[in-house]
Length: 127
Image (cartoon, rainbow, N blue to C red; front, top):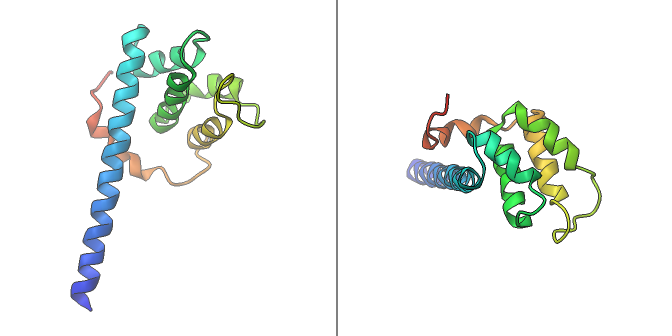
């Protein structure tokens, strides 16, 4: 019984660790892509990507997701600007579901943001 509990705990911890590394890797990757196109630090480049009307919608949606994960209050106004709460139209507009999730993160409405501590080490310091 104890061995089974320990094995389950280790498996759960490993699953969480892998998921967190994947989140950090995604944030880093999308940030680099935005910074390759737009000047500025990580959050500024991601905001510019969200607002880029000529950019690919998929890239813009990735930028929305990354901004929600980064939890930087500078992103709040731009994400609110695009959030209508209507049905998603992924061809013509940003994903409303992704915007809603990002806004909940930024407004601290989900109370589940402690996990970001596990992947923040992956991002270079931009202070």
